[in-house]
Length: 608
Image 1 (cartoon, rainbow, N blue to C red):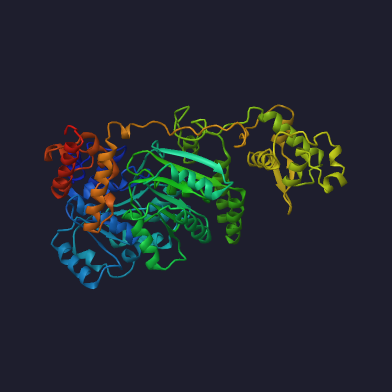
Image 2 (cartoon, one colour):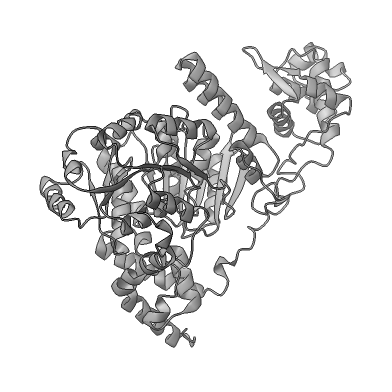
């Protein structure tokens, strides 16, 4: 294509996808494809990276091949494209021989613009047919799987470097939502890309509200998060299969519509759980990290981590499954020191260098959990980007929810002094007993009731003092050593004792309770008739069941809110709704317009 800039992409986006403009870097990424300039595109989850290759494929001659890691993801993409009136297909192991045989003639006739294949199929046999059809380009989705340094490395992706030998005249393009600098370099090297354009969008997700808490009562903390999102879809991630089963059972016994998902379940049970979640028969899926990459569900309103992930890359990817439609969503993380130790143990059998890198990533993850600064800023900084604002307005730190202890310095000095006076020979439990003034026999026998630091924190319970000790250890003022986790003061701890540095300590929840701050106001509900929105959701669910597709493929929540705000009464007005293109207007317009008109008539509302 000699003149890529002559393509009217805004009109293409409006006609097929119902979008009024580009998201950041989408146009640049599309122009790379049209001009044949190979590219690596890193856009955040919800940043519209799929559109970067789908729109060019629609206007270029030939068929675009898209490499995708999971059957479920390919199916969702093909179903979604069909809904937008775009001819696409997939070839994978779930199709019957007859279904596959029907695709090949369509490919030869040039009727399919986008073909989805798994990396295993593309690098293995059975793809000779690709030599007989004109290809426009090859797009590799979830490209971080190529790199050993990526958070979800897959050996079969590594072999995609052979594509250059098989298709030397076809441009390759790599897309991912998560890739640090080393990962980007590894992707380019492994795919043998020729002078690729590297487009890196902001990793910030301003529509996500991040909250991090130390895990104290898992079920109660998870339920509190779920109760803020009644009747909404969400994911709860657990560390182990056993945790999934226990937590899911506890939630369902209390009336939550939850289903489990982990690798220990049978294929049929996992498939049913996933389908129940996608079709909204279940509102909550409780899962290990085995769940997620194959999900393109746009209306996930919350993601809860009931345990700490092992890297910030994993956390960014998993929490990023919330709010893909750009509407507000919440991400809660409940962690404990035990999570760190479990992950550290699991890393023990790795070779030395990969283990060193993995431990460094694990430490960064733990520091994020224990940190008290802006969560958006911390995530951006990890990925090498700056956060320009002083206050994001969308995390526990910036919303003032952390409830810091006013006399943090004094409390910290008392604790550190006690550790030193105990000659750095005891652990956290014993130290907390001394500070609280316990009369246990071992303390009296050791003569520690005669220390100047004995009983100097009487206003706090043993559990609260223990919590302060853990926070000081988390922040690096105390270190645990040896088999029995004996406490010792670090150099920064000595600076605190000298008054040269002030740590931050969280106020115990039992002291001076502070009502959780409301989520920041967003304009996504402004002017929306919530009753009409719920009626539209019911119709969407009904149509999805009839068509055997996920509800969000019919319309996303953003489109339904726009309908309930604008209340269109004509086909032309319906096209003015975000996410409504010509194909969806023709397919669904009559039923949605009828519902809107009936609802407005019965509730005395004007239509748009």
